Image 1 (cartoon, one colour):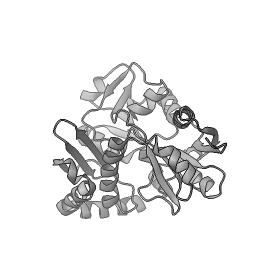
Image 2 (cartoon, rainbow, N blue to C red):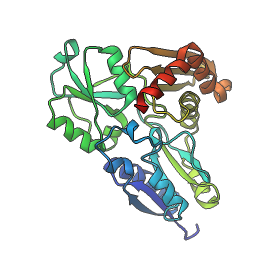
Image 3 (cartoon, rainbow, N blue to C red):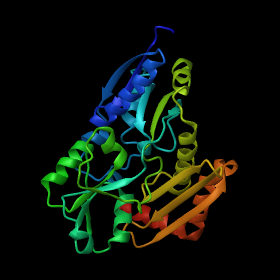
Length: 308
């Protein structure tokens, strides 16, 4: 094995570092030498504005993209749902690790009476906000920003009824509390629960190393979900959920995709099962179906509202 050290770029939050160390261990087990380089992303620094107001796609990945392009790090590890569907020129997806749970969960304070009356739920995600309001139209949703630890502390410090988190993030750093319920009715963010590693297109050494970590099933289902997102969004943040699952026995893909209005009152969904051979265009065709069923008009309304 060559003496080259693969420098792993990561955000400096506990969850991001856990993900980077997971990739590091896998590379070390294959005989590669590594070093972790932590940087602070803009999305971690600016916490007083909702994410969609910052107007930047990839606010959590841009800093690491620049570090890679400048040659400060060789690869970067991300929660795949934070990565824009179009990567910067010269940067490529090198590996998708086996997916963890895709579930969203509600962390609460031990009393669920609010589910049947009025409540205040915290989330920084337009997707979670819209789905929550669709199911609980009398509730209020407030913005919640920061890394997982910060958000958990804010929930503790405020008189909110609960907050929505990705189960995978809490499980990875052992932060999942006793008081939670699975939101199995909520369609997750495209690629939720998956970790992706990116590298420079010209870096054959790192690409070869990372190819050994790639999980093909996770790569395919996240590709479908992100293609659905890309076809719908056109670079706009919107309440979009997508989940593709492979059924090994039947050799089929079950895909669920959804687009909501910001207030959760409008919902356009697609739910289909197709043979595995049709996976490459499944996300695209599903998104076209949503757009043709009123999605084009709804996306225009969402963009106009977020501009104000």
